[in-house]
Image (cartoon, rainbow, N blue to C red; front, side, top):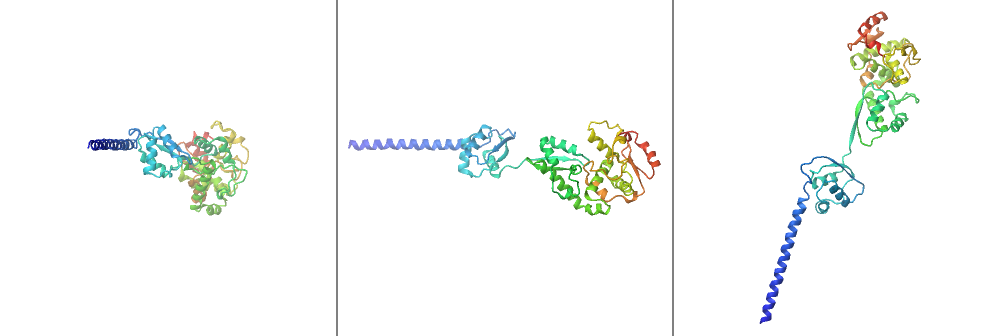
Length: 357
């Protein structure tokens, strides 16, 4: 009978050992779950600083997890990998450039990685009346290199907006004033093409080409004249149709345009650092750029005209058919004259501006 007691005692010991093991397993499991859930929380709930994070094409989850931990964006790479296996689609992470912060949970980060990175954009603004030189400077400020800018500005484009433009002429007049948004990585050629598209759309939407033709101008000539109107009237958009009509009066009668904007443009090309009060260019500027001596339009636009200047050339103010002169006074107003004597009298309104070229 004694051996039977020993067997019962041994069985009890085994049962106790099994129970202890089960308790340990359960305790370890509970601790593991607690650890897992804790490590899925934000690494730093109080820090909203955005951190750049790149996911390469074909990157393994293990590498992504470790990089996130190294940047302090998650608490544990292991917890991240377990989450991907247990609760997310491990093979559905998208490559790209992201911005994460350490106050994001693992679930929030993974959701972004599943959605894919939103492509970053930037904006660039060109102004009506701006020149090609100004556009070049804005492109440089946007981070583009000089050689890429030059290559794009001298490239040959097949675009309907450029119809009639002599092949040897620059893109002066075509960097249409507006604010444009592009994805990071857009080329300078992409930017220039967008300005062409916008300008041509505005011209088409307003039915300007037929109106230009009715006034005796092709598209290139109209853009050239609009650039002069833009330069002369500036922000005085209500005066643009009046100025346009005066220029038509002069063109149609084979009279020099008399636009100092044209001469000033030529002077700037010769010496960008010239003194604006150096009036000697009025006499030294040769044809066809000396609009005080030479008839017809200059060889190319002198700035990038806006839609108001283009509309003015398409729809000149017929009430000013009898006018031949205008000037901008120091008070910002424009003064018109039918005769040279009236024009000379109006110069009393521009003692400062009439001495600037």
